[in-house]
Length: 121
Figure 1 (cartoon, one colour):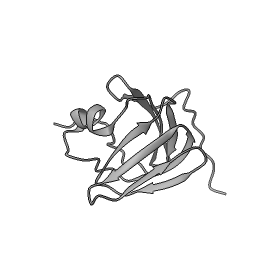
Figure 2 (cartoon, one colour; figure 1 turned 60 degrees about the vertical axis):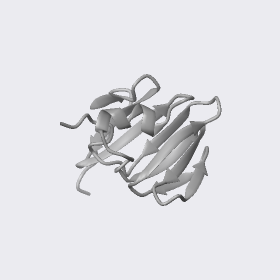
Figure 3 (tube, one colour; figure 1 turned 135 degrees about the vertical axis):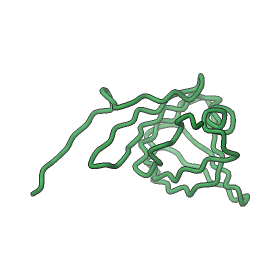
Figure 4 (tube, helix red, strand yellow; figure 1 turned 90 degrees about the vertical axis):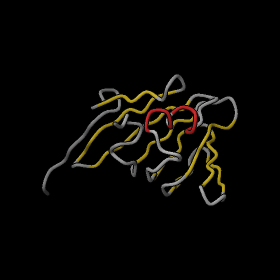
């Protein structure tokens, strides 16, 4: 066995705010980025992250495990999906997303781009 590595979201490498509607806690393990996001009711990528990154739609891939809440995803090609607790979801780049209802979304993203929600330029 080559070894093990362990990190806690209670002591993340970085905390990335999503404007005023949540945050992402980021840890890096073996060169891979893992993000635990908390998205408050009213959060929408195009309103709360787009101003940070400056792209028309989310250009990060995602591989999510949904812990709580519901999130709706609208792909640039018009296809839509919704995910809730205990769902595992893969989302390709080129989308918008938002919280559905009054419960915060908490999700762990094992496939996020290391630059997700990082201010560019």
